[in-house]
Image (cartoon, rainbow, N blue to C red; front, top):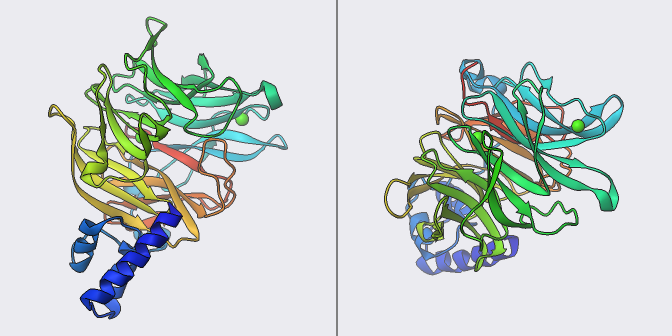
Length: 369
Ligand SMILES: [Ca+2]
Ligand SMILES: [Ca+2]
């Protein structure tokens, strides 16, 4: 991704020179902020300084820049820290302003990560890495929102998410028996229907190297990232939950990874690069998915990363992970210095944690406090 961007910057620089665009302050800012965009269409957009598609590089505002206390939704997330003197992954819940953090797992010998809250706000599905060395296995579980009553769903399962009726969990099967933190090492999608205790394979057996799956509210679609599988090198796809059709969303200008849908399935957010987060309108009601109005929410300097964007239940905010470029965004990847941030949809953002303890994979609790 980085190499491609450098080449594109060079292309845009030469195109800019040819067209004689003056490098004054405001244009330069726009120019800088579009330099990671991909093709001629984007360059045309860049010529319009007020296109609104790209944002200049920004930094977190003071915490009181947003009225975080008025946000009535809590946030769950993973964090790597000491429990009883032992460093391990735990799942925390806290208010949207970062206050009142509670450790929901408290298991020094287990690594719990990737929490996702059910639509009724009563349960959390997550993964737990158990065992050491060659015996290490990633499992899918769910538990109550307060951390009680842990239920095992599947061994060698990954990246679980809820159906919007909260009755099923979709998860990806590990590609290999051997443990790996590589996020796209998946093969096939399975539905776990809780009441029936039934693991139902997705009818499209060619689903491969997917990650960050997100199930649409009407249950008909998934959006997901795919890397090196299904004929794609690296893209965001929409695919039928109960059918075989797959659509590459790149034709709508969607590039990047880790898509997340809002509560009514009309808006999507994702990370275009390591350093910018985007949003667009998505139509999942028509026969084929359509995306429009792709634009930046925010963009950071390249010594940082922004990842794991999650849109709030009222579609007014996002929460995401932010920290030094050296951090590992994959599930199980250490990311010292990473904290959680909340932004409004205009890109006004503040940091809500400051302990730097590998705070990642935030998910909004979709019911009011
Ligand atoms: Ca733990
Ligand atoms: Ca979410």
